[in-house]
Image 1: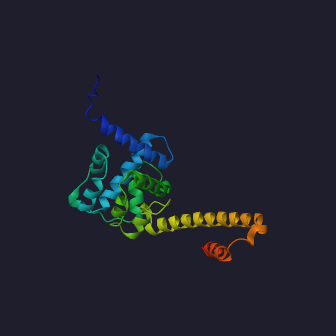
Image 2 (image 1 turned 180 degrees about the vertical axis):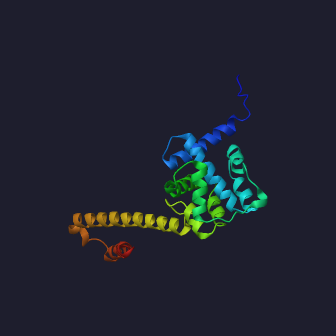
Image 3 (image 1 turned 60 degrees about the horizontal axis):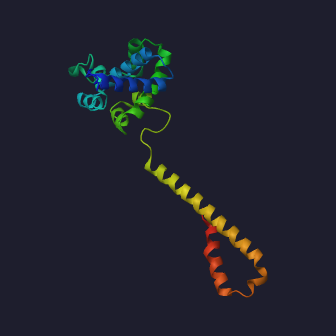
Length: 207
């Protein structure tokens, strides 16, 4: 039986999986480019957080990317106060990309990270940023934390669709039976027929 003797193999595989996911969010298969942008994104976010905030966020990362996250970190100097223009300059310089491409790159990485991190982790980190930077780092594809109310509304709509379908089917069947049995209807119990109609007809107003 053969064994993998590389103790870092699993950590490397996980890091490559994350890198592939971020690359997909960026729309590229270039791993070097993806890593440069991700590293710049991590460092820029890290330096705007407090020591506690950075530690909490870093704990969510896989082992090798956690090393990237902390590379060059100076806890005594954070949080570094910078605005959107400084943020763009930092990422453009570290990632080696044009300033005009930075905003979309930030959002793309944020989109990928949101899918990889545990639910709410990215939202929690971004809460510590000033509003302008938070908006820059916020993914745009969907809300950071899906609304529970939205899920409940969707479930209710699905239930309504099912009930409406069932009511329609029962009414169709009732009409078919009625059409076929008109000649025998006089022989049936009028009270029973009225009760059956009352069970179905009120459902027509369900919406």
